Length: 169
Ligand code: INI
Image (cartoon, rainbow, N blue to C red; front, side):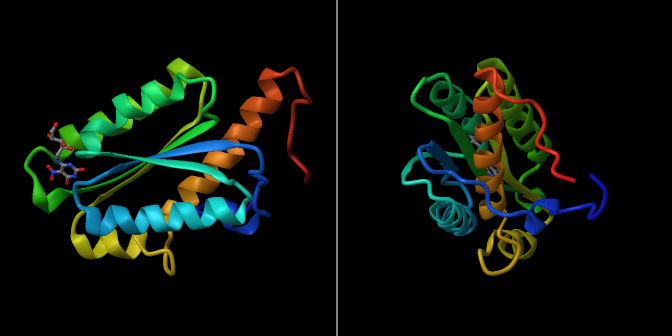
């Protein structure tokens, strides 16, 4: 699909999330930021018609992959949205925490076949993180929620033998 090189989903109609069960796993570390991501994600899920939303808190971004994996293994969970915030200036082990979270969340998704969405901010400072998390500005939590619903729909359609291809252009 040609066009915008980022936030391409902003131009698309919201996917229909009715009937889906979505679990949000959120890190408490940097909760000034992650609570904003959570507000954005729950708001977007509501706009997409997702009424079955649960929230699990974990200590930090490093703990997101295991929680996401055990949730994604369940048959009654259609998608997991993982929310976290790792700020480079706050920790000398930024790369371990951020890299571990990213790889672990991808592994959880691929191992289970359930969408596990990477809603983890990795920024240089708190200012950048708050800008990205704010639902009224970049709304990265809402963006993650939208990706979760889109991918849950794709997995359901394709794995049930439904039609392949969603390119309307
Ligand atoms: N966890 C975060 O979510 N963000 C951070 O910026 C961060 N820093 O700065 O260290 C962080 N550390 C905690 C880590 O995620 C684990 O909770 C901890 O190491 C226990 O396993």
